[in-house]
Image 1 (cartoon, rainbow over the protein chains, first blue to last red):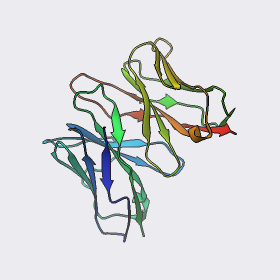
Image 2 (image 1 turned 180 degrees about the vertical axis):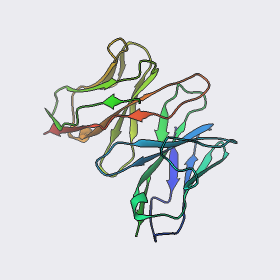
Image 3 (image 1 turned 30 degrees about the horizontal axis):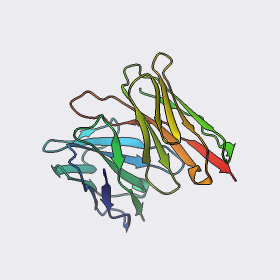
Image 4 (image 1 turned 45 degrees about the horizontal axis):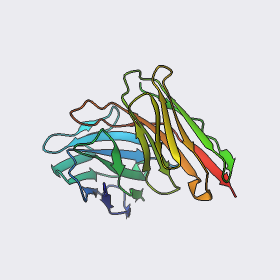
Length: 116
Length: 114
């Protein structure tokens, strides 16, 4: 149980273009999903909290107009990196919180974004 | 600023021995504590979670929590080479109405020597 999928697993895009990443909870409903970013040799940094049917809450320093988050259903959240730049290249990982759980989060496999 | 501190390692442990991983956190209001295992290039995998002071055992893994000392640990018994990975300590606030984003430590790189 508690399987989270992410698509695509790897994407290369040109500077200035936009990239959409999907995060799905496959076997449970998640009112809350989270988006993290991890740079090489660094720990995960929370970018935003995505709640179904409401606006995402962004962490300090994360541009909401650059990282667009939509949580359209209890099983799907999307992150769109707009006007991507090389410094946006990173490992983006989503997680979902079990609806009736105690706060434990299950992570998707991650999306490795490379902006050229 | 919430902080989670871990020794980055590497921590080298012989196969079959007990691996002990430690973590301290700064926010006294933290209510939920997690250990994740992350292999290189992969996303984190939940190993254990603990909410109350004391020990929690699951198979070869034991999580220990001491809120007064703001200290969390993970013990891995009968260590196997497949346990070699980076172990991330994460701390959160569970308000009962939902979960909050987690604050992660930088991880401890564990090496199990055959």
